[in-house]
Structure formats: C-alpha cells, structure tokens
Length: 423
Image (cartoon, rainbow, N blue to C red; front, top):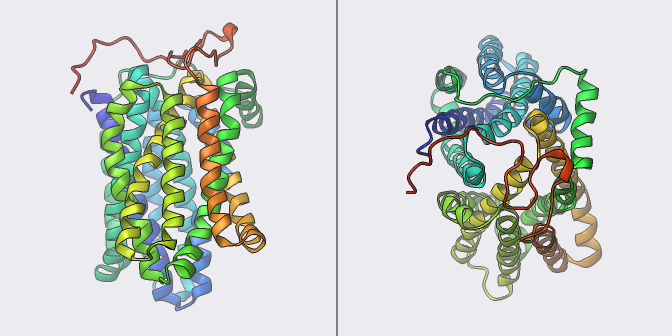
C-alpha cells in the first residue's frame, strides 16, 4: 500500500466493485418489486451471470490489445452511459430495458476485471504480486459487504434513481483515480484478430510448464466451488434445519474471514512463494470445510456454524492470491490478459460442471459423503500445488526467459524501483 500506483489501482477497483455490488443486488429486488414474478427475478439473476461465461476470452484479448488503464477508464465511462436507459423505466412494460442494462453492465464488468489483474503485476515488484492479489481480493470482500448491504436499502429507500446516482458516482470516482498514468505500461500490445490472439494465449499456457501445471488444480478448485454452491443450501436446510435467513448468514460471514485473510496475506506472501501459499491455503481450506460439514454430527447450533464459516473466508483469500500470482508470474506481459481470462474460463466451466453434478452426486452417494468429496477435491488440488511448485522445481521453459523456479520473477517484471520500507 506504500506504492502510490498500486494504491490508486486498489482504490479504483474497490470503488468500482462497490458500485457493481449495489447494482447486482438492487436490480433483482427492483425487478421483483416491479413485476411480483419469481421467474422474472430469476431471469435477471441469470443475465448477470451469462456475460462472464461467454465473454471471458474476448475480455482477455481486449486487455492485451489496448492499454489496460485506458481500457478500465473507457469501461467505467460506458458503465455510466449504460445506466441511462433505466431513467425511462416506469412500469413492467419496460422490463426489457432493465434486463438489457443488467446484461450490458455484467458484460462491462467482465471486461474490467481481466484488465485490472493483468495490470497489477506491472505496478508492483514481483515479490509483492501475491500480497497485492490478496489485498485486491480484500477489497472485493469489502465491496461485497458495503455494496450488497447498501443495494437493497438504496432501492427500497431511494428507488431506482438512488441506485443510478450511487452506481454512476462509483464509476466516475474510479475514472478520476485512473486518469493519471501509472509508472509502468504494457511491454507490447497485440494486433492480431481476436480469435488468433485468443489462440496465442492458449499456446502460452501450453508452452509454459508452470501454466500447464496450474490447469488441473484450477479445474479441481472450480469443481469444488460448483459442488459447494449447490450442496451448501442442502446442507443448511437438511443438516442444520435452517432456512433462507441461516443460508444468507453463513454465506455472509465468510466475508469476515476474507477481510482478515486479506489483511494478513501480505505477511504470509513475503515469507513463502506463491506455490506453497496456494498449496497450504488449499489444505487448510479443505480441512476447515470438512470440519464444517462434519461438525453437524456434534452440533447444529447456528452460532457455532457461523464461527466455522467465518474462518473459511481466510484460507479462501490465500487460495485466490496464490493462484493468481502463479499465473501472473509465469505469463509474459503481452499475453497476461488472455491467459488470465482463459484460466477464468477453466474455473467457470468446472464450476458449472460441479453445479450440474451436485444433485446426482448427493443422490448416488448421500449428502454427507458428497460434502466430504467436495472438501477432498480442495485437498487434492493443494497437494498437486505443493508437488508441482515445490522449492527448486523448474516451472518455466528455459528458452522463454521467464522464471526458472517458483520463487523467481517472469518477464512480467515490474520496473526497477527503490525498495519501500517493510511495514
């Protein structure tokens, strides 16, 4: 945080994500108020998710094709303009406008995120990349708490105009923070057609051993996440005897652990390399998740479960920070946006697969065993990370000029700068 470029990038991301959460929570509430239809509300939720699945490869190409800072500014300004059609909404007859704006905002958010994470390694020193990712994830949790909490209240107390004003203000503040150039820029800008540029990103993954080794762990993490998303609701309902309130509480308290983990990740990241950070965070995540699932045999008290699920947020930040740092440091600056987007597609695809398999797995094996399988997948991913990225193991191809071991920097090296004081 002593780095002024990172501080501006971090703050801009926090403000922008807060606006995103206000919008994401407020729109389905507004749709239900407008229509009274559960189906219409569910449709609005789905439209928030689809662009992320469909546009990730294109978003990665854009993050490498254009200057990332300017891309983030352009996206933020477009997010303001896209809100304007909502001013014409005065009844259920304009529901299509609400859905179009929701879809457009989600698409723009999908473009913003790869640009932010592709830019991050250029503004911090290589040894600070994991810590920077942890702090970026921390601001995601802060934005989720603030934005999600405000979204429902704003649409209830101030109506749709209040949502528009707050959301637009968040994007304009982000633009103001990004207006001044950073000390570092992209080393190259891709000019190929979109499909060729996307294929070049896939080739980078194929050619870099460190990236190849990350595909399976990322897939397993996504699979576990998909199983969790579905089985968690069943667990709260059947094992704990809870309802909507308890489900929301246990999901929400994870942000508390996430904030603690984000605050501590800088210290941890300075003492270990990203591979070990990822591996041990996954093992702790796996053990804590298994404890939460199986503690229901001892007690179903919500306060006890809330404490366990709050703890879960901390290793989750370590998993995110380690995973992102490994990919960022094993990727050249010129292809980083596409590689990050491709890994996000792997994660999203396996998450969707986990969601699809959750019901069949629980029906075939029973809920308790299915929950333990979910925790075990995290443990296997952790063991793979510790094995693949163990100290002294070469994880980059010698002829690329990138890192030769898990603790070294790749060609995505930040410019030389005077060392900052250690907090």
